[in-house]
Image (tube, rainbow, N blue to C red; front, side, top):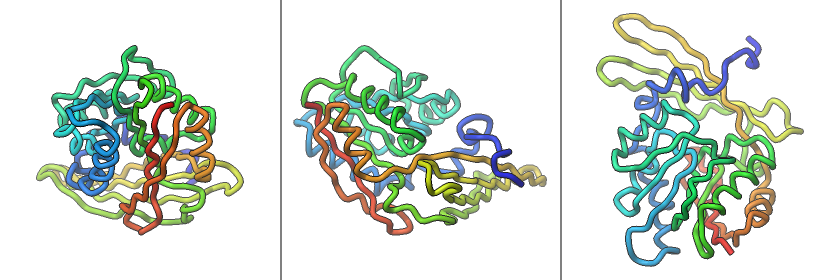
Amino acid sequence: MDTNNIPLNRLYDELAYLWPLVSKPENYAEEASYWRDALLDKLEKGKHHILELGVGGGNNLSHLTPYFKATAVDLSESMLKNCKKQNPDVDVHIGDMRSIRLNKNFDAVIIHDAISYFLNENDMFATFKTASEHLGSGGIFVTSPDYLRETFTDNTVHYHETKSDGTTALTFIEYSHDPDPYDTMTEIILVYFIKKNGQTKVELDRHLTGLFPKATWINLIQKAGFIVEEKEYPVHDDNRQGWLFVCTKR
């Protein structure tokens, strides 16, 4: 099968009901601690108001809400419903992080792995400008791409797990590769084996993510008006080097 024929981003649309089986909040405890510490290190004492762009199912955010008041944005209404179940006190908005304007400032803006879905520098820069537009001088912006050009390994199976909620059993496999090493895009193929009421069906899902050198990330964030600090982020299962970009608005 030509992978180009597989529909895009189904996990965030008609397959969003599988999200609680694919990803659970407890899986995010370690990495969320790095985000929490980065924010608390920069902000004065008090329960500050943060904005998460591209919140998805809200699992990372669920570990931050004890420390911060939060507002969340995502393109997917289905994923925002998942987020709201995990984070009932969070104010949610449907919107594109490249262009949304909530017309208010926050103490910090964060973008978790949703930032990896941008395939060109224009979209990345537009998103960094969105973060800047929601911060005053001295506000904090934190983000981290899943991969950098320097840390990507081609042809890799990252996950192969089976989970059940007592009604539905899900086995899923995630395979990532770089179809064209000369562009800025990678492809992830997800295979879901869904067993329910004695019947098993197989669904395919395709995600495209960006792949840029670390220098590109830093240059674009700086161009959007931030001072950038790099913090080591050793949370990946394959032990690749990860980075949190902790940024202060000028």
